[in-house]
Amino acid sequence: MKERTLLLIKPDAIQRGLTGEILARFERKGFKIIGLKMLHVSKELSKEHYAHLVDKPFYHDLEKFITNQPIVAAVVEGKEAVEVTRLIVGPTNASKAPGGTIRGDFSNSTSRNVIHASDSKETAEKEIKRFFKPNELFEYKLNETFLYASDE
Ligand code: UDP
Ligand code: MG
Image (cartoon, helix red, strand yellow):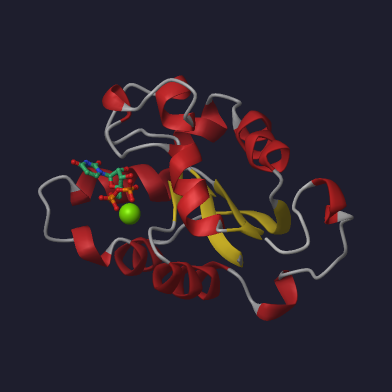
């Protein structure tokens, strides 16, 4: 059923001019963008967002990378958004990501892998709150007749 998830277009994608192309893939799939902004990630926000990785040897590089240049954060809404966006994004190691996925098409790196997507419904709820205030999320109607059958 209808879910929301968080996407972060990482600094490497912004620097390479891929922002529009990446967002377009989610729009074309039928997801509705309900929140969108550019921001700088602080060191504190990086430590919170990547709490599961702060003890890893690569964390220092990850923090430097994600805090050094702006990112674009988006919330998308649609059917099974959490699982389906992860499929569109592809696996963490972009070298092994299949063609047709965002990471597979645009990256050959585990660290500079162009995009983040929440990995579970629980994570998505927490991550959306981490990056967006309630009044930064927008409710609006799309005619979904051509996207889903009424019982989906
Ligand atoms: N990362 C890294 N080296 C690694 C594993 C992860 O630099 O060996 C970075 C990479 O940018 C990745 C992020 O840490 O996207 C978060 O890692 P996670 O395991 O949560 O992967 P994801 O959910 O992004 O696929
Ligand atoms: Mg993750």
